[in-house]
Length: 120
Image 1 (tube, one colour):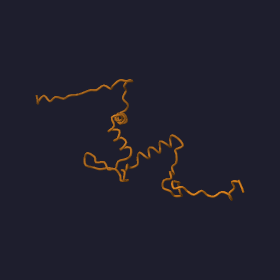
Image 2 (cartoon, one colour; image 1 turned 30 degrees about the vertical axis):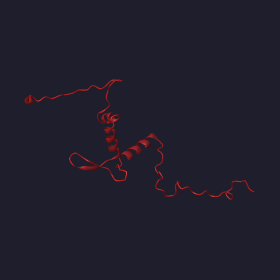
Image 3 (cartoon, rainbow, N blue to C red; image 1 turned 45 degrees about the vertical axis):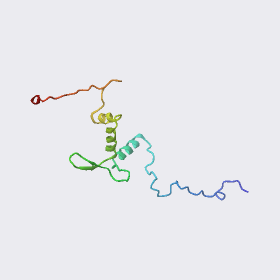
Image 4 (cartoon, rainbow, N blue to C red; image 1 turned 90 degrees about the horizontal axis):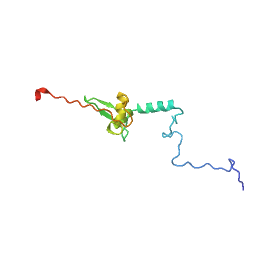
């Protein structure tokens, strides 16, 4: 009867189904970013990647002139913002700068109506 935990008494545990094996493609070789600069760099690289659909095919965007291009992840985020009423202002602020309005105030709205005098 030995109660010691020496290598002679221990047996190697069997690998569980979900554990990583050598060469497993699920292993994150980049690891966790150590600094904010590394996190920013990782974020930018992910946003510049080509966006893919559920089957892994690249997402193709049809432009107004009939031309096509592969969408990036950043483009897809921005398109998602545009469709969300709670976030559409973020896209406008990114494009044109932050609106300078006070707390609880609404931005001024200007409506321009053009009347063609020849049609009166």
